[in-house]
Length: 431
Ligand SMILES: [Mn+2]
Image (cartoon, rainbow, N blue to C red):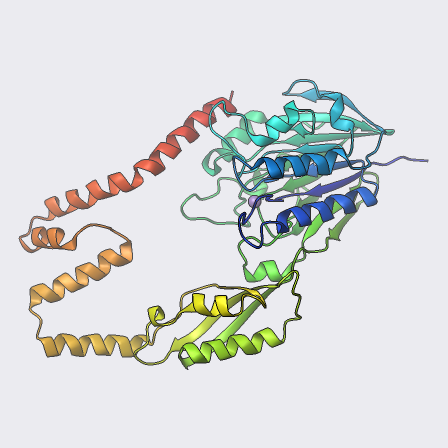
């Protein structure tokens, strides 16, 4: 009989997400459901592709619950370490309960020589933390290699991966695990991803990435590539309501990759409402009627995300509509949140402001000033337009630019400091 390893692969548990709110237990409940299911399926091993915790300094409540979750599970006794590369020995206690191999995610990542929570758990003997390192485990008669790189700043991901240059173990089933943006999935213009699927090294039997919160499965280098996705919805996008939450379960000897759905801690519903010349009463009426279609559950109120399209009644602006009052009013029924600001009737608004300008017979200077105010507002430049306008009106373009740059310098100082510590981090990673 061929013994094969049964491995559950999950990601992005985000324990501590929405702490101090009604949703704070959701991440824990989802993680417990997932681990229980993985144990029930006789998993020899659980691999976590990052973001076990939602923050860099998770509260002890979440540490203790997670450590209890994995160490009290009824795990396999049929597993031992064969060898490691790029790291030290593995403590024996890791194999009490269900063995867990994890990389740290972006939410756990810390700077310089600080220890992150996943490394700390490894020190305490609760799991195996991989970062630019590999472990080969013997599961029964089967050898399983796991090669992991924790979340690193996006702009260094390709370089760090290249330096690490992992090699699959011979005669083993090799799993490659990262926690990064991949340009095929996420494009963030502020910090564009460095890495694409084409950059992943060849020779592995299975590729895994955390970080991306919706599940997916495709091929890389002719082998399966999986994204388990988060166990709870975090950004409340439409996609979150359409893709099931859970983890992948694989058997090494078969080409068998199954997505295992977990029981969700609460329902998540994404709804659109179409507004035509609406006022607050109209919006409330629509919300009350859409709630009628959602099953009631007083213990675990559903999460309802509402996207509004269309426009408001003439003369009304989004600040005239008190959405938080509506959220509050129905708070016993559902946890409502709105996905975007209400749209004003733009043509009407513009016409009105044009008329006002004509009526008031504003001077050219005043009109210019108004435009500048608006532009600076749109750009989020928090500086008095009056000073800038004076310079511009007198043709002192350089002086105006200097003032704006000065302001920008202060705004971005903090961001730059953060970047500097990322550079220091990089030196440490790219040993
Ligand atoms: Mn995440």
